[in-house]
Length: 462
Image 1 (cartoon, helix red, strand yellow):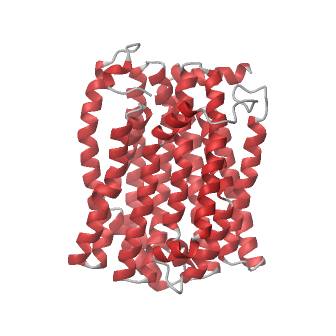
Image 2: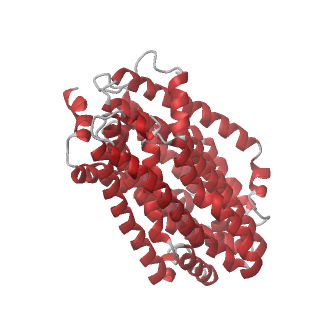
Image 3: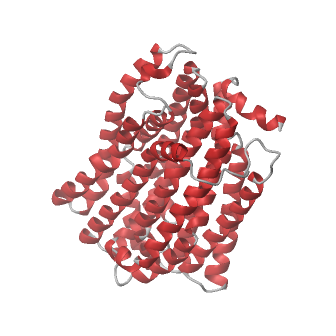
C-alpha cells in the first residue's frame, strides 16, 4: 500500500524531463506496439490472403475508428479525472471513477456490438465495400465486433492503470497483446486456413488475455485503487465529467471515421478498390508515427493533469514544452521515412507491384506536412488536460472536419485522385496554423499563473 500511495506523488516533485521519460517511455512503447498490432494484421492478411483482402480490411477502418471513438469517450476522460483526483489525494472518488469505467464501457460496448452486427452488410456497403471486398470486410468485422466489449474494457482499464501511476504495467500488457497476436495470427491464417477471420480472432483473444490480467490486478484489495462493493454503479457526476472530457478525443476518432468514409468514397470514384487498399497501407505506416506521439501525449497527460490539480503551473508549462519538442522530432523522422524510402516501407505489406507503386506515391504526398502534426497533437492534448474542452474539441476536429473534408471534395475536381492525397498536407498546415493562434492566448494566461494560484483565471476547471 505504501508504494502505491507514493507513486502518484512523484508527479508533483520529480524533475519533469525524467518524469516525462518515465511515463512517456512506456506509453510510447505501448502505443508503438499497438500500431505494430495493426501493421502485423495487415502484413499477414496481405501476404496470406491477398490484395483484395487488404482493400477489404481498409474498408473497415471507419467502423474500427468509430468503435475506438466510443472506447476513448469513457477511457480518456476517466483517466484525466483520475490523474487530477490523485493530485488532490481524493482516493475514494478515484475508486468510483474506476467502477464507472467498467460499467460505462460494458454498456457502450454491448450497444455498439448489437447495432453494428445487426446492420453490418448495409454499413459496409455504405463504407464503399464492393462485391469483391465485402466478403473480407464482413468476415473480419464479425469477429472484431463480437469481441467489442472485451476491447472497450481492456482499453479503458489500461488507461486507468497508466493514469494511476502504473505506466510500465500498461505498457507490458500492450506488448503482451502484440506478442500474442504475432503468435496467433499466422497460426489461424496459415495453419488453420481461417483467412482474414483468423486475423480478427487473434486480435480478440490477445486482448481478452490482457483484460483478464487487468481484472485480477484491480481485484487486489491491498492496492490503492481496486474493485470494491458499491463502485459498480453509474455516478452521474463522474459519468458526465468523464464523457465531457472524453468528448474531444471521441469527436477526433469519430471525425476519423467520417473522414475515412469520404476518402474511401473519393478513392472508389476516382481509382477503385486498389486505391482503397493503398490508402490502407499508407494509413498503417503514417499511424505508426502518430501513435508514438499519442504515447508522448499519454505520458504528458498524468503529469499535466496532476500538476494542474496541485496548482503547480510552472511544471505544466515545462512538460508541455518538452513534449512538443519530442513530438516534433518523431514527426520529422516519419517525414524522412515517407520521403526517402516510400517503396521499401510499403512493400512489407504486399508483393503486388501495382499496389506497391500506388501506395508509395500516396505515402509521399500524405506526409508532406507531417513535421507540423506533432505540435498540433500535443497542443490539443494540453487544452484537454486543463479541462478547456471547447478549444480542445476545435483543435481535435479542425484538421479532419474543418479543413480535410472540404479539400477531399474540391481538390479532385482539378487534380483527380492526386488531389485526394494532397488534401492531407494542406489540412495539416492549416490546422497547425489555427493551433498556433489558440496557443498564444493559452500561454499568456498560463504565464500569468503563479504556483498555488486559483486556476479560474483560465476560464475553465477540470
